[in-house]
Length: 276
Image 1: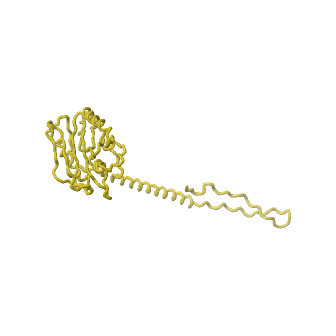
Image 2: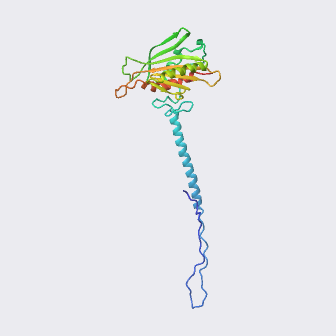
Image 3: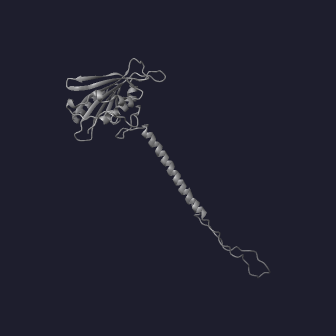
């Protein structure tokens, strides 16, 4: 604690009694009164300077700490989902800034308005989300009787840590349903309830950028609806599968790459599934 000046003040006694001089009966002769010592103006000045300097240093230190925290958050070291719910444990956080170069899409219950699944994530979007992956071969799309465009698309990827380099990783994007939110959400909830009793299920509601999600082994099931009353509902599945190994050579768990690459891919897809 910095004390300023001399808060207690100085005490000054009365005149001091001196020995008597001369013969008995003579009056006592005191020393002439001494003026009180001058109070130093330097102490309070130095005290205030200490307070000001201390405050400035504390402010600078606090500003530095906040700046360092912001830098870490900007790098995506400790991200959270868009609605503020904590990111799921065991999953690799996506980069601080999502890279999007493809067109956004807004579809309806008419399958003619659905995007081609092979355009939902571009090559650059995939490679920016998963930097250690490289795309090999052509995309493989699938159409349905009622879908004029591909409702499903598979991309093969080469990874540096594949157990078998001849068996590439796979990213498959499947449109389960797009349209009026209520029936699409019902379809999603039914699939979620059916998956819940089995091994490999993980509830990821509010933890992967979209409103609701769950993992079923290597498949990330996603549901999203925009904020507008007429916003469409999207039920999309990303199958993010690979047989990978650790740096020691030991095989990783079957869902290891799903948890590593999935969040960054979901983040991009969430931006592109728009209600504009």
